[in-house]
Structure formats: C-alpha cells, structure tokens
Picture 1 (cartoon, rainbow, N blue to C red):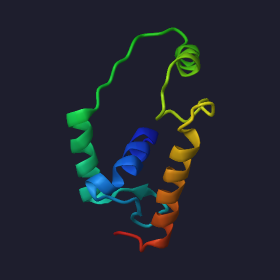
Picture 2 (cartoon, helix red, strand yellow):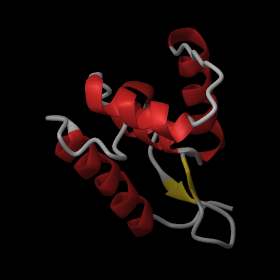
Picture 3 (cartoon, helix red, strand yellow):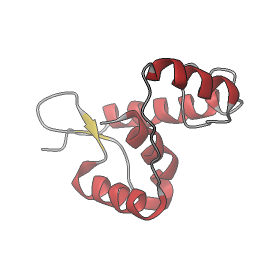
Length: 104
C-alpha cells in the first residue's frame, strides 16, 4: 500500500466507513477489497496529480517540502503543525488492524 493511500484512508476512514486490516497470510495491511474500492473511487473523484520532469527529483522534493504547505507529506515535514496528528492517526489505524482478525 502506498503512503498516500494509507494517509488518505486513515483520514477518510469514518467518512468512507473503511478500516485498515491485515490480509492473507502475511502482515500486509490494506483497507480490504471493498474499502480499497471506496478509497479508489474517492481518489478518482477528488484527487489530482501533477508532475514535472527533474534531473534531481529528490532536491525538488526537499525544496517543495521546505517552502510549501504539504500537510499530507510526513517525510522531511516534521515542522508541519499537522505532522504529529497525522502520524498518530496512521499509527492508530495500524494498531487497530493488528487487533482484528486477518481477512482471507
């Protein structure tokens, strides 16, 4: 699961009636078949992606994180006022998933 899906799913869990779950025989976490579909549908309706070619994309990323308000980006973004809240929300989703039975 991508970091973006984990973040959006954690933020939208109540609205979309989804929750993180362990699946299969591994410790892999997803929002389950129906939850992943709801999240995909939400993203298709609401999310937009923009990209630009860059010779050193890690430098561009560092600059953007340093100069822009990017509340959903946790990496290199501890200065964000939302960082601790989002980190806690994602951790709570993971902890809850580990308490629930594994979905097959």
